[in-house]
Image 1 (cartoon, rainbow, N blue to C red):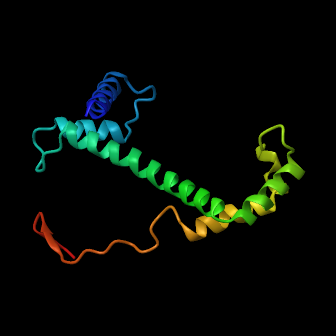
Image 2 (cartoon, helix red, strand yellow):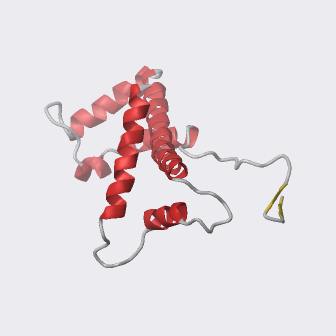
Image 3 (spheres, one colour):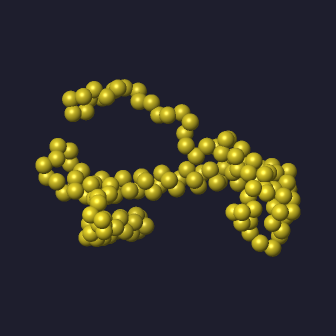
Length: 146
């Protein structure tokens, strides 16, 4: 529970600092708009700082979760297939050696590694392939949303 309180405090501080810090070029960003709406008393729909914090959490978690899941699935696929590990090790050792990490410039010389990553992304894509569908429509502000 303490972690959530600290994260909430961090988000509050972020919002406060964003509000105090003037824009260098006087342009507004998404956070400026969200803060302005949350302070406007004449809006039809109440939008609070808590809504903004929930939105930020969704942005952070949504981006992290899919990447982490993809990496975990890739590692699981590799560790479940010993021949993949051996072939990757041989390719990396022949191109990079055993004493240092892979550099980005060496990636074109590692076709098997590229194939493993592409196959993992094909088997376990980081985004859903089937879009969500609603079971029934609803009425919002007098408009029917199917």
